[in-house]
Amino acid sequence: GSRAMAANASRDAVLRLYRTVLKKGYNWGSVKERDYIFNEAKSLFRRNKEISSPKLIQEKIKEAESRIELAAHYGNPYPRMYYAQPGVIFKSGNKAKKKINPDYMHSYYDEDEFGLKKDGK
Image (tube, rainbow, N blue to C red):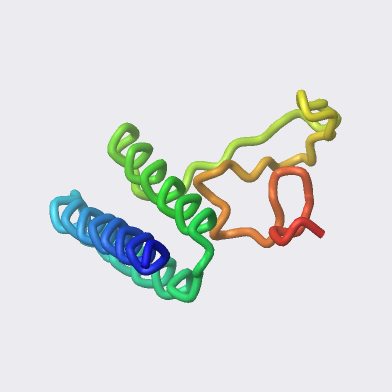
């Protein structure tokens, strides 16, 4: 049915993304950074392999694509973090914690940028 087709499309997109990461890793500068890219990809893809929610799968794909673009732009495969001034109030009305967790870092944290658990609690 359509659910199986959607699952296959997601699987294909994830496999394509994994191949892209590995290909970029093979062509990266230093051996240390190449090893980091391969280990990071293996770790995060394995950690997320049981995800079945199409929405969450798309979020993880977007996260990986963002990291790929940032790595290419800055010539640095390591995650980039950024900080907000404590007390900054976002449009949503939530106050910033000291450290903001950008979208491309969600796989590293159990909380979103507002201190909420990923499951919304």
